[in-house]
Length: 339
Image 1 (cartoon, helix red, strand yellow):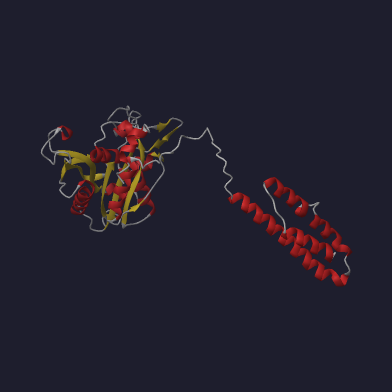
Image 2 (cartoon, one colour; image 1 turned 60 degrees about the vertical axis):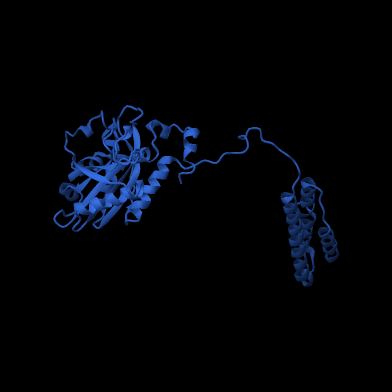
């Protein structure tokens, strides 16, 4: 038995293969169930008891060396350049062009970064929502126009289920499950039942912010808005706030920035007013705080929301909203240097 093992050890050390087929034949010869080493293993039971230890060790050595030799030859073939020029005619033409980040993603990340530096964390929620989180918890009246089928996508079989019309629903979910201080931004896709045109779409993207704590004032809101405008549109940007109405804030305001095209002098883009509207904001209505389990006598807060498409249009002068979702690579390539 020892002599056979030594003979096989010499053969294994001298193994060579010119190709993968020859290597497979060697593997079968030495390591398969009917191979030479397995035959020796079968004969091991006939070895005398006093020789079993030595023979067993030699058998294991033989098997390990054979496996190592086969693996080494296999790796040699795998790393070897065969010189074949196999061409897959079904692949895309070379060179394969690399993609770029979508302009909406670029702007969304920029908005998130600005608010992150102010201490805001990201909160996310479901796009398929219920009436309570989208409307009722935000102080919407039962007959508010937003509840009409003409403005909101309702699930016909379940009238209480809607596609969220704003990411404010995320704010209500955070408020009902946590206590102040709350400082969050809520980016995400929203849906409204609108005819698709160059200036409107049935889905778009928003970023909303919410800050609730003790002694939060409108002055805090105004300073955050000014800082955001300067960071997003340039240090020379000015802002103005116009009184407005939202069910979930009181007082409420629309915010304009000085036109970044003409610098506030007046041009066709800003309709010769020198100002461009970018977002809505206001102090959180006490009814909203109470509806979500927060004591409005102790805490106050502000909220703001903007359309990412709107901000992107202002930064890059994209005239047609539909271009953001058409996946035209010619359009997307224009933003290669934007990040």
